[in-house]
Image (tube, rainbow, N blue to C red; front, side, top):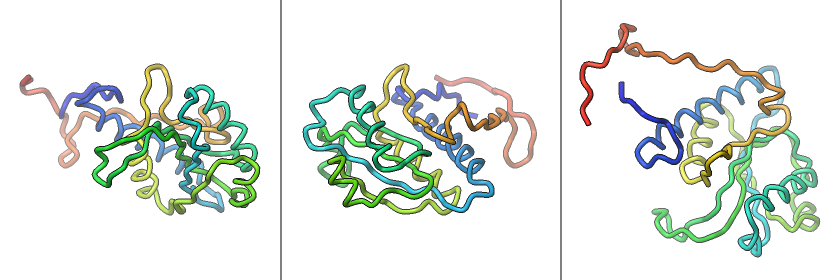
Amino acid sequence: TLKSCKMGSCPKCFVDWINKQSNRSTQRFMKYLENKDYKFRHIVLSPPPNAKDYSYKFLKKWLGKVLKEANIKTASVVFHPFRFHDKEKVQPYVSPHFHLMVYGKITNTPEFHNVAKWVIVNKGDLQTDVDIFNCVRYLLSHAGVRKKTHVIRDLGDISYRKLKVEKEPQRHVCPYCELPLTIFFIKD
């Protein structure tokens, strides 16, 4: 098995971190969805253009007020500090926005924009656990990563305080034959 630090800030191991976080979030969402009517929905909340002049702390506080206005109570939030000019995602420009995976109904979009001045875009429902995993993986692939700050923030009924999910045990066995894996040698 390949050794990894699984840190979001590591230029070599960030993909392992993305996979680990995506798996955790998917397990959290699927546990919450047991015996529920709705599915999670991927939406994007973009503040007005002058938001690039504000700090992350201020935007996060502002987002809290906007979520109340949109009647969003249960959601998972990922902050993106920039967007890209091109499809290859090589030329970024500053444009802070928030991606959310929301459970339940959302306020009427035109009314919301008139009151909050934020743009809300519905990217569609996440039907299966694979959809959720892929969505979280995409969001984390270019999210704003900061030390001592959670990249994914779970709010409402899926918060860490309200929903307890058992951690996945670390398996060091072969996925095919179930025999234990051992380090043969380490090559730098």
